[in-house]
Length: 165
Image (cartoon, rainbow, N blue to C red; front, side, top):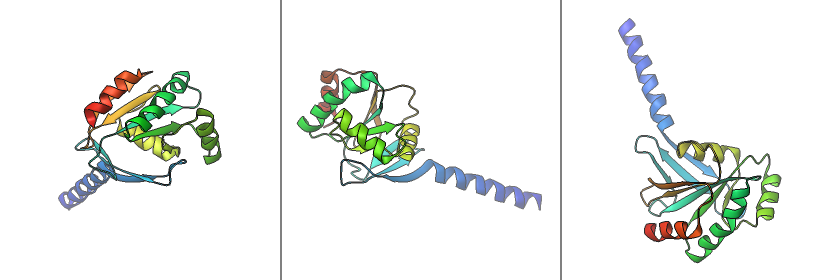
């Protein structure tokens, strides 16, 4: 009896671990008609978008970050010039209206993921965000290629994009 009970407890634990390690999440953007679906695989440490065979970058920022304000024009230019998918992840917006206001103030052209659940999910998927700005580049297989913390020169970002394209 104890053995059967132990087996079922073990099976339940494995199931919980498996389902938490592999998860799908869909998030809305403010300035794009496209929703973004992410699939995180904790076993392989991959984060894939619906365009699973394309490299991309995530840009984590907050409203009051001075370095983020300086990074945004560079990312806007690279997004347009290089046609490279860069998604902005806003942390700390309390509502859709507040996120919309921030979007306009910052003159952000990148697709903006503003929901708290998006920020939380993506922050965990990249191993945590402990300061901003942070730009995380992913290769076409969904693996982290490189993570830049702090204000990063446009030339460095452009070289990384050229390498991944």
